[in-house]
Image (cartoon, rainbow, N blue to C red; front, side):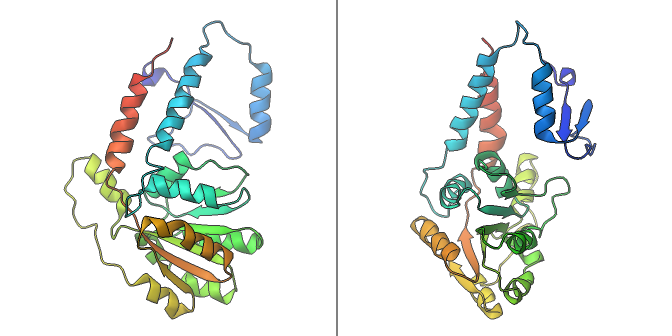
Length: 269
């Protein structure tokens, strides 16, 4: 089917925000669960519907999401990190994502088991939102584990909020994915064939930076340290800042090349 023949229905609590890449043909505003239930109740099965094809799509997506989850190289791959965090976080645990390329990996590979446990702001993709979002979650749900997952660039835009978290006596874990650059823009520029220019920078010593506020600072130096460090931080009261080097070298291949190839390989029966 050609792209201009596809019909998109927007189902949400709020109306659609139309932009150059999202322009639904119809909009259903209201309770999502009830809307889907009503649609299902009023659908009449059609002879040409191929449910086996959608099963193949689901299986292929699941297979792709597992790729890299067992890779123990260091700096850590985002696929491996997502796997670790899903294993560590309880069902009611909340992750608050800042904006960076890691957000795509969590959106694809991190299944939420309870409502409102994966927070990310897409649309305008505001950098610096991860830490204050996690703080707000901890204030509303003080008994739930909360993990802020941020890039080094996004974290430094609101890093002073560590003082607020300490002053409010929050038990909060902030995981910095450190690639010493604006990773999302580097990824997009690479896909567009642009030169890698002006997007790398030097970070402060995040351990000392955390300690200067009175928080706990941790630096992960091997893949084997990822799980124990996160477990300790989640179990120990206080504000914890964890510096984790991340390897984004496979992003262009995995997302811009492997996914389209796998999609083309899927054929209807």
